[in-house]
Amino acid sequence: MDSTSAYHGSCLCNAITFCIEGPIKAVTHCHCSQCRKAHGAAFASYGSVPGTQLKVSDTQGAIRVFESSPGVSRSFCSTCGATLFWRKATGDYADWVSVALGTLDTPFVPGRQKHVHVQSGLCWLDWPAPTGVGADLSAMDDKVVPTPSDRGRYAPHRGGPASR
Ligand SMILES: [Zn+2]
Ligand SMILES: [Zn+2]
Image 1: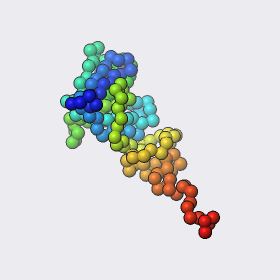
Image 2: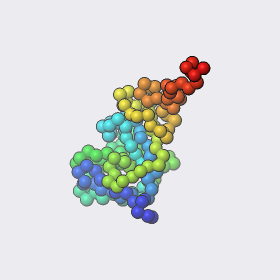
Image 3: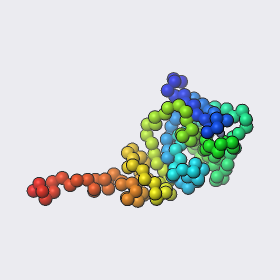
Image 4: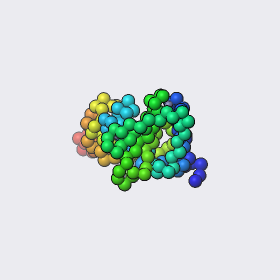
């Protein structure tokens, strides 16, 4: 393991700290209502690691787990309320943990990023038209986020009447 694949993070009050001993994969911004409520934010940003690569230190016993759906556990700090981890007990990634990326203290530059459940997202979210995101963007209101095809539609028209 090299230094670029070790990450440290903590909750807001620092009662819970953690270390990720490996690369962070599957960087996802989830706009679903459960993630929005859990974070109190317009969307939640998670990256995933195998559970064996996540070392959590919680000397005060501050961590709590809320089961938001059957088999889906959301871990948070009971002192400061920070959202930390998301885990699903069933399926192909049952031994993986999704870490709330806003809690990282180590610089992290994701490669590919994906927005999911965009159709459940807030209508007022005024985000810049992102690049390299998932196909779900096509479900967004054109007024909020132009899809790549719409950006083409609104682009200056080359070869129009003036050039004829
Ligand atoms: Zn805390
Ligand atoms: Zn979600």
